Amino acid sequence: MTCMPGSWSNIASMAHWAIAFKTGLLTGLLAVLLTFTPAAKLYGNRYGNAALVGLLTAIGDTYAHPSHYRLPYVEHVLTGVVSGLLALAAAYLFEDRARRIRAAWARVFG
Image 1 (cartoon, rainbow, N blue to C red):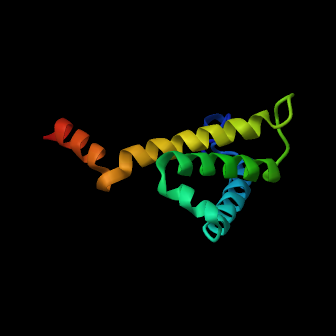
Image 2: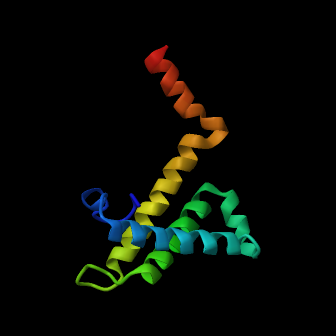
């Protein structure tokens, strides 16, 4: 939901929620299906995982709705890029049982 361009301005829109649900459902289905192929090795690498998540999100978004931008597929690619970057950030922050988050929490709250 937060990866889609314009998400924060449409957070209460049921149409936006429906599009996000369709995108996420297809993305998740494709991600599970890829675990049965040799491409599953990419999930073990932080960058491979982010690339797969971004690509699958772009595919799911393309299927879920037509682009709202003048140029075709730009919105879908942007959604995929943001999704991949969020996956990369999450992999960085949550590795080693969220060591970085726990360390920052300890520094702030002692």
